[in-house]
Length: 289
Image (cartoon, rainbow, N blue to C red; front, top):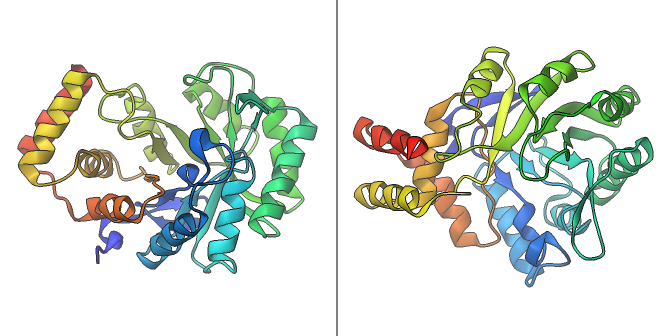
């Protein structure tokens, strides 16, 4: 069995977690909407992740909606003492499976209570405010009003720590004037390096950076380069992409997602992969391709 503890740990708010975690988004049905095709398989994946040492699970009650959190509760409740569950608010699903902003005080408060109920907890470990000014990536916009709502729920004891998702450096700076920011969750990978300086600044501040879509948005040329490096190392492209992220910065926490046991084990095995300098050089060139 892979020992994911060898990837090291980092602070996530007031908790310390291993740097290789699990993202539960794919446990819902197609398009992250409705129930999964195989609920028992989804439960098995969650239990195996925890058995392999995962202590950081990323989720949201708008996955499904409600479905993913209910599966997490069925699979893992009562939760291990060391398990940190991070959820998100700030969006809601339409009847057509669309993703829509949900930033009003009433919507945010309801979302927090939905997460509490469906996860079966009295307090949420970390709640990320998902910013929806542009669904395709971070975009400037005022966050004081919605973040203040979450900060008030934090003062009431319903939330331990608060993070931001799909956020710009300016929004993080603005947010830190309202409350402590535990983490930032943005798209970042070998091919999408726009947050390079941002990651370094967050590391200096002791703030975790949680990238999503580790293989998202690669061009054919970039994908070919990654596949060639992976073949040379006897690894999968996903394992190489994850290993590169682990080496990129110590404040990076990974949450690769899957609904299959085999893929879960492959992803976690990235902890065993040492990238030689020549491979790192080839991978670093992908961002410039």
